[in-house]
Image (cartoon, rainbow, N blue to C red):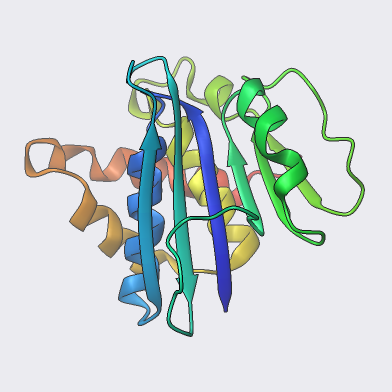
Amino acid sequence: MNYDILLAGFGGQGILFAGKVIVYCGLYNGSEVSWLPSYGPEMRGGTCNCSVCISDEPIGSPLVVNPNVLVVMNTPSLEKFIDKVQPGGLVIVDSSMVDVKVERTDVKVCYIPATELTNGDPELKGGANIILTGKLMAETGIADNETIKKALEHVIPPKKAHLLGNNLKAIKLGMEYQA
């Protein structure tokens, strides 16, 4: 197993949090892992991306330049990174926030209206990132439900521990979503 994952969007969309959930899933499965955040100086509302590596072998660099999995939550991120995805790679797009289609035919693309799916459900508020993480888990098989739950329990801060159920609901929604 070797996943070079790049998650990208605006600050405030939970890109770094989703990256942490994914990396802890890999860690709990005994894989080599790395997590490298990158964000603009303006923070919330500015550019944000996160490199996550999960591998059966030692990781040479934590920086993902040519991902085999790309998760994007806005149009500028798709436009910036789509040409860097490895042929045969996986692209997961929040189609609520991205108004263009991927033109490449050498990658698998999953469109999921994650932000739209959170509308009207207070339990899913702010959970588009976790819905996309659920889709990533379903497509890659990086972790099973028990490992995902364990990762969420670790990553969710104690003062927000009551949101575990909401996050599990978002993961399930993403895993089960069919376009």
